[in-house]
Length: 179
Image (cartoon, rainbow, N blue to C red; front, top):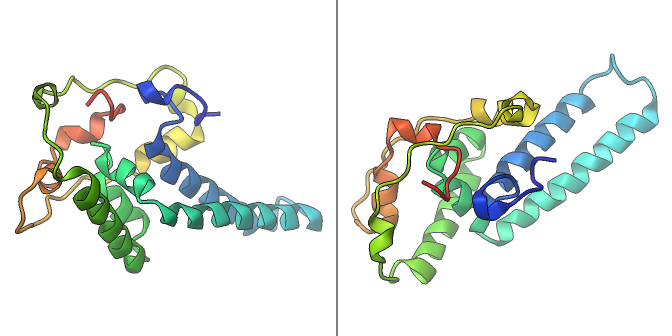
């Protein structure tokens, strides 16, 4: 399974993958629930609905911490553009997520000093390993990327600078830790 792996190397199982993985699975289960032509046995549809409900329960629990949203937002290949695209129909979710991530930044990270090694240029983007791109999740994840727009901001801090520093090449980065 893709989420099993070594998250310290951002090789599956990293925090930034949680939201996209659950989105992918929920979408897949919704598609299966809507298909009458494939599964004629009623118990299968009931089980799919129960699976969707449990997964949605876990998805709702992600709201309790901004870490998951912050992780995908800090990924150079996704940023806020992915969240805005994925949750386009739920503007209330987007504004709540922005507020939670901003609060996390302000309370935990904004006043921390930068070290000299954090100012190093990022490495070139890592290419997908063979076989990875063949999974339906990897394909969906790649297709769900949206180019980032630089937001306008009146306050300039590291968080705001990060949001304003979107590069077209950022979407090619597979590994947010090496970035």
